[in-house]
Image (cartoon, rainbow, N blue to C red):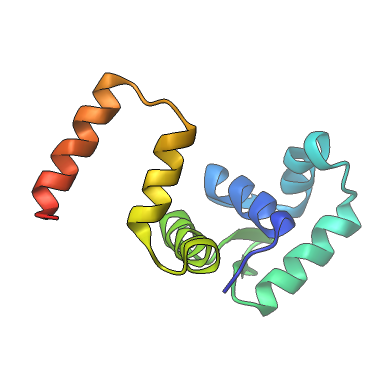
Length: 120
């Protein structure tokens, strides 16, 4: 499963809040997206059909929440990126990031420790 940028936006708001009504979600998303209530409802409906969002219809107003854990979506996105861009070569990806971005001494030490623990 590959999430669109808009699906990430909706899910981030739901992960941060736990669950929200349509009105509350619209209010949370509106400043950054400009989306109307109808637009948010359309996204929620489509995302529910895909299994990304669940709807608690027991009370009124209905509450919406993410149906997937943030960590699971992040892991899948990382794997998709790794496969698409680096053909599964994690070492090549890490090396490219480290060549292009500075890390602190503390981050370097944590990375060394992680590599040592992995017995690479």
